[in-house]
Structure formats: structure tokens, C-alpha cells
Length: 337
Image 1 (cartoon, one colour):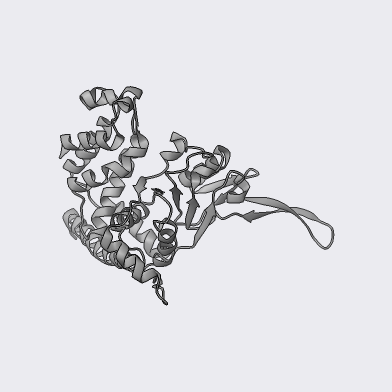
Image 2 (cartoon, rainbow, N blue to C red):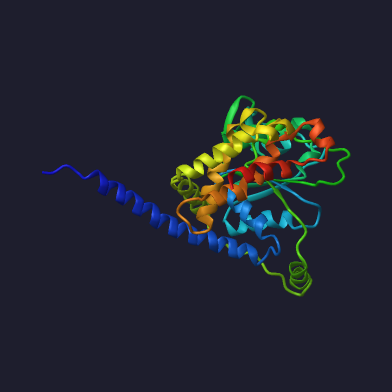
């Protein structure tokens, strides 16, 4: 009787990962193609949103009205086979309107007991529309849910369904009467995704596709179990030492201190370790979305801005000079690329 060869066990594990990656990558690409039949001219937004979900995270979508942010979330729910719900955030929205509340029931024999009625947060894909219009108290109600995947009402823990993702939207205009998201909540979002205007050809297609007699409907390409399997696979994909060093160098240089050099004088505060974790997951998810088995330094550079920019702030003097966070991140990327 001979001892098992450890190399064969490693080879088998690698073969399983390769087969799983090929299968999952095909499903994810099918989902991306299904979304593109409904959402036009926002390929980068769709890709980054899918990367966020594959990474198991939450995304903050920022753009002016009418750029299909709500439609994107609805389409994602159908295409990925997730239970999607939408909450319109307003100044009078209360935490119980999101989380749910206990009500007092009385039975036919007069016995009274409390019953929990779950709120819209009990969804696999929650759209928090115009999240910055709700009060800080209501915004913070999402903190525990986003980070810990459960909520506590009247001292009782209630687990949220899996997967659970928050896609929040924010309007960059009409900031009067809004409550800017605190840094603690911003850090819960894996990415901040800018939704820009479509180009001319895309807008031409939008005109014809959306104003005719028929409307293209999204089709399911995955289900919740497939999404969970993809998220597990993302965490198993190998990451080369050069990519890990690029992530560490980039995130650490985005903080004020000696590692950022002269650029650090422009930064008031920078990203914490959660940014490194987010970037590590995001580059793996992007590789899987492209059908690759391992991420590259190009993935790090491409995803640096959406992962880092909401986790940084510039000094007053830097803002007075007209510097921007995007410009500072470009400087930091040039030191790596």
C-alpha cells in the first residue's frame, strides 16, 4: 500500500477549479449578454455591477436621472434569478419601513403575542433608490444588514436571504435636502459606479428600442444557487504575487503617509484594509467574467477608481487647487502601471 501523492491531489483540485470556472464563466457571460439586450450604452456599468455581485458586495450607482439605473437593477434581478425589491428613500422614511416591525396579534381566545413582519430588506437584491434622501437614522439601518447579513429587531436576530446585495442609487444633482452618506456607510459599498450619458450610437438604439410597440424583456440566465456558486468560486481563484503586491501598493499609497510620497500631501484620509479586500475580490471576479482563471495587474488598475474613490478625501488645500480624487488615483496608478 503506497502513500497518496500530494501532487495528484493538488492537480485534481486545480482541475475542479478549472472546470467550475469554465462553467460559471459561461453562465455569467450569458447573464451579461441578456442584460445587454435591455440596457444599452452602459457596458462598463453593467460589468462593474456584475463584478460587485460576483464579489458578494454592494454597489453605489451615481448618475443623473434617466440613465436606466432603476431598470438595471430590475434587469439584474430577472437575469440572475434573484428576488429583487425597491425602496424609494425619502426624508420621512423610518428604519422600520426597511427592516420590518413587530405587531401585536390577538388570537380568537384572547391570547396576545408579537409577530414580526419582515420589511423589504428581506430580498436578495435590494434597490435603495436615492439613498441620500433619507435621514442618517434610516441610512444606518442598512449598516448591519450590509455588513453582517442579518438584522436585529426587538433583540431578536433575523437572518437575511442569501445572496444579499444592496444596489443604492444617488443623484449628484439637487443636493438640497439630502443627507450625505457617512464614511462608515460608504465603506460598506464595494464599488462606487458612475453612470454616465450614453454615446450617440447607443442613444440612437435606445430611441428605437424603447419607443416602439414592443419592449424587449430580460430573460433569466442564472438563479440564486448559481450566483452563490460563482461567489464561492471567485474566492478560490488564485492570485499571483505581483497582483497582490500591486493591490497593497495601490491601497497603501492612497493613504496619507510616507508610502504615498508627495501625493500623500493631497490626501486627508484614505482607504482602510476593507478596500484591499474589496479590490482583491473584484479583480478575481473580473477575471472570471472575462473567462480567465487568474487576475492581472491590468484588472487592478481598471478597478482601482471605483473601489477607492469613495474611500478617500482630499485636503482643503488640494481641493482649493482644483485637484480631484480621480486625478489623484490616476497619479497613484501611474506609479504601478
